[in-house]
Image 1 (tube, rainbow, N blue to C red):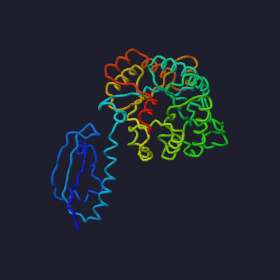
Image 2: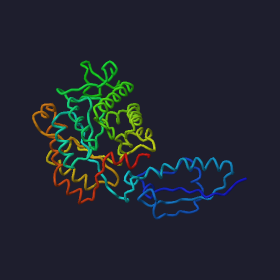
Image 3: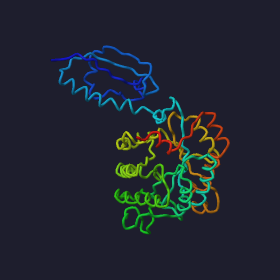
Image 4: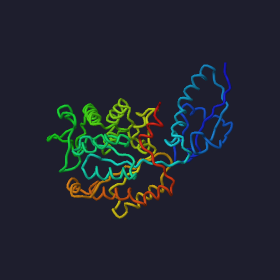
Amino acid sequence: MAETIAILLYTSCDSLTAKQPDPTPAALLAVTTLPLTGVVDSPRNPFESIPLTVFYWLVMIPSFNLHLWLLGFLWSTFPLVGSAQTLADRLGYPPGTKMIIIHADDLGETHAVNAAAIKALQGGSINSASLMVPCPWFPEIADYAKSHPDADFGLHLTLTSERVYYRWGPVAPRDKVPSLVDETGYFYHDWEYHEHINPRDAEVELRAQIGRALAMGVRPTHLDSHQYRLIMSGDELFDVMLRVGHEYKLPIFVTRDWFADHPYLQRSLGANDIVLDHTVTIEPEVAPEQWAEFYITALRNLKPGVTEFVIHPGFDDEELRAATRERSTWGSAWRQRDYDFFTSDQFREILALEKIRLITWRELVREVSPK
């Protein structure tokens, strides 16, 4: 016995352009060679901000095969719809809402970094930050975090020590993480010539860093990765970070912007993982005199959803100049420029002008994570 059915293919109008690949599921490849019965444009997809086009065919399919085919078809097309939501949509904000996390990296690295971040946090300019547990000045910022439990502090999981004269090593015993350390016992400056990093060693060290932070009174809201090493060094290290985050019930900083270059990220993440929509960070190519212009342009061109601005505030003083003196990138003057812009009236004014909302990781976890 055969049945006549209507096959519907939902696709956004944008995906019909040459800029994007044909979204047709593999199960429909044979069907779409049949005469097309009709095309309908729907005014609005509840999951997207752009209209849909619906293609449909009338096809004769045996009943048993029909049931199997429909199951496969629905399974293959469902992710195309759900994944179009921005994080702001999931939070219940109106379509087009722009939200940002102003996130200070590298707290614990030096006193000058801690002092600048604390002052900016207290002034409301920065609303989130992450702490480097292995670094010499971690106890200072851990004490601040303990006495300010509502502050939005994550852990900046660290497996490298990139400076020449200012170094740090693992929290775990060095003999338990041999692939992470050089002959002097410090973390490697770089992994370029040390691609033998053992994921098991990485997991031991991540657990040691989280354990020390908890023991010192820090209650982190999220995890991220120093120099993105755990994010962009392959699926094995990313899966270690994700597994540890799940165990401690902590979201990790991942953005959809990275999926194209690192497809294993999307494959590893589950439906309950928080994924930010975009990220902005300044790069060495930006000249000092163009610092403010870079950030102003980024804010004016901000896309809907949740964007994290990853910044590196610090005070350009003798301590930070000595710690970073071998190169200017992410150095003392760089960090002062970040501090200056994000504590300026100009930054506050553009937030108001562009109707950009501030949000923290704590708020994301409370509103988005499964209850």
